[in-house]
Length: 216
Length: 216
Image (cartoon, rainbow over all chains, first blue to last red; front, side):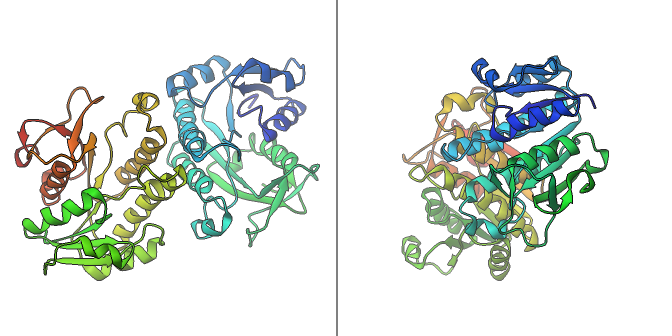
């Protein structure tokens, strides 16, 4: 595992993830929708901004993946809270599933999905205030679990912008109010992407006391 | 095949379907969200209005299906064009998939899905003006195809309110501009529900020249 393609590299988690991966010695292909977005990335020989759009076809995505020769894909994109639920369907569900198909076409087996706490708990949706988003994430996760990809699904709690602590909790008994700094999510992704024991597994993660490398 | 449960019986196709099924001698369980809606159905000993809500849990739906003892389920519900895409996710995708799970729990194998032309043609979505809806229908259909249900998927063209002609076209070569009266869709559902040769198959249907009973 030497190189990682990030879908949503310009996102809040994505930007931190670029740094984390570079620090660990990975070559990073940072998927962005327009060249302007490349400005935010560190100037480093390991970082390659690449045009990538979840509105593109599976074939276009596969071509992009193939050209990079990346060993793994991380999906950390999201339509975001400011757009309508049309984008939730287009990006979080359909865009995600297309990227899975493209990964398979490009023969990249390793795929890490950033999902959300609650996406696997339909009973909690009505009270979440995020039901449409959680439905989209639920079915995207379900599609991923039906592929033959070497996937890992991470379901972080409510995302915070505070500094990372380097420690988390995995699969807590009560999930309702868990939260986690985005930096700890990024560190977790950078840790699991090369960890074979996390393949075909899903984890809910929140702030906690376990050092990230020991949590998996 | 003696009885049919209609999800969305108060919808435009659903209301016509109740009549068509009764005419063919089926007992009909007409799923409705509130008792007021029962008014539109014919007073007939074969017609039983039943409370049913796609916002309910899989367990509640299964209980409802089980109590009726219906032999088949028809999904002709839709969030409709007047609601937001949150309802597209909640009704057309998640509601539909929950009803499939409930059908399996209630051991009702026969399931006819009213989908939409284009739901299986992602290349046409951008130009359709209905992309979010077609994404929801696409993934609902895909989920259905992954169940062990005896499903039939019908993908009607643009729905019209004109009178039915009793004739249709199935799987036309060009799908872009096909349309079909709702009455012909209802007649098609009433025809295929008891037709074993349509099990685990999907059909795009539009106005045409083939008498409906001969089209399958």
